Length: 320
Image (tube, rainbow, N blue to C red; front, side):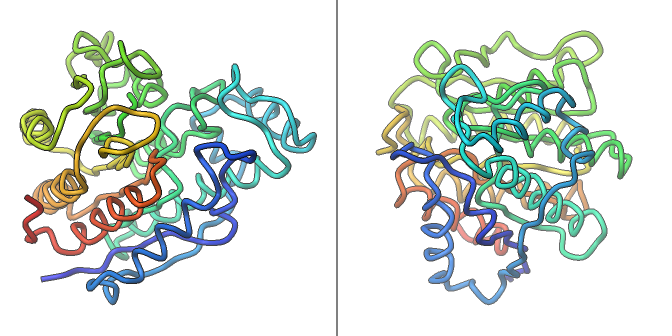
């Protein structure tokens, strides 16, 4: 039986992307939406526009000084927001604010009991640190959502699950000492891929020691390797009993991505989404929020993200 899923979209959200043939271009949004429109479950998808995040919402995760820097370089329209991966362009502050605002629109609908499932394609910007951009990510909408879930809605166990090929370092280090932020990340081994973090030994610090799970994968890992790693994530979620699940569904872990070396099929994303939807129904009153994350092969991202939304709507469909 299918259930409704909110899908955040919009022209302003689509503007988050970088010029000059950058891998993270502005076409990613429309490529996904076109694929989604062809889904047999299309009638169950409730489309909702993104919105600008307020500055105080962004600063739940980011420092005021860093937000000032983004505003300044956005007005100038040039320069870099980090060491060279994340260029500024005219309006980047507003575009990045729509990614945060869109994620928060989804979170509000979920937490206030409207529809417990949602997905935002241009979100999951998991590299941005509290005080800087990183890896194509200006503002970390994942981090903002976790902060809002804990501080505004009072949740004590928020599970962030990341299957993007790159380690979600901005989220990990942003909450490394917070035991309320549960973290499970399957990613290409940092010895071979940016950002070089996410070793098995990184399990949290201080009061959060043992609350984080990092699973580095060898280049060339396929669906079978993913399933073996995924069993650890399921055991982790089972033991944690979260109150909300966030999924970073980065599609750069599929075979054929131009900047990574994993070889999953879209079935991995469908399986992860379906299983997490089932855990959300058990532990979280159904509450689950998916975010697009990375993905630079347009066919891959369109199909993988569509499978995520379809699996949120109907978790009984077999994905393998």
